[in-house]
Structures are given as structure tokens and as C-alpha cells.
Amino acid sequence: MLSAQFRLTEDWQIRRTLRQGTTQHSRSFVLNRRPNRSEQVRFAFIASKKVGKAVDRNRAVRLLREAVRVYLNAFPASHDYVFVARKGVVQLKMQSVAQELEALLYSSNYKIQAYNAPKLGRIKNEFGNQKQRGMSKIKRH
Image (cartoon, rainbow, N blue to C red; front, side, top):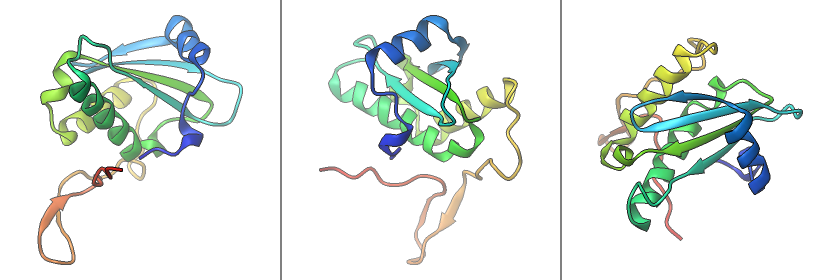
């Protein structure tokens, strides 16, 4: 999960990024970005009722947040990013969303460096079971 230091918390910051930022589209989400004055990279995630009911909206936000966490080092500092989920993101797996984010970052002016891009594949954990690399379990409270 992304820590609070990487989040856009104020509504006016999110609206300003949506209004004044540049937009990139993918199949499952829209990425808006805008330079900020701090040296920090900050994110916000939006899922409207078009995505589905509350369970679907929460899953969409969790998928996007986890994909951003995996590629956090690939984002240049001093920018605000707002991710707007589209309807189809709920049916996708985390690996597909992460690959779409990687393609979007690579197609933009920010070329992902080889050392910044994680390898999303199957690995074996200490018990011999396979699990997805670059993904963590979502903790329920």
C-alpha cells in the first residue's frame, strides 16, 4: 500500500490536476499528471459509480494503487498524478493493470529505466508455492 506521504489529500489539488494537467488514456484507466512545486511525487485514485458498486470501485482503486506501488520508482518526482478508473478495470488481474501502467509510462516522455522496472512473473516463495512477483497481499482491517 502507498504511504500517506505519496497521496494527494485535498480536493482542490485533485481538481486542479484534473483541470490543468496533461491526460493519457489506457484501456482500463486515465492518467492525469501535473507538475507540482514540491520534490515529492503524489497520487490520487478515483473510481466513479460508472465503474460499479462499492465493491467494484474499491477493487479498482486497490488495483491501481498496487500497480503504482510496484512502479513507484519509475515516476519522476515533483509531479501530481490522478488515476481515474474505467469500467473494465475490475475484470482485470493486477498483472494486466501493471503492464498497462508500464506501457503508458514507457509511451510517455518518461522512459522507464531497466533498473526501475520490476519483473512481474512467477516466483517461488520459501514454502515452494508460486506467487506473483511485485505484488503483495491486501491486508483487511
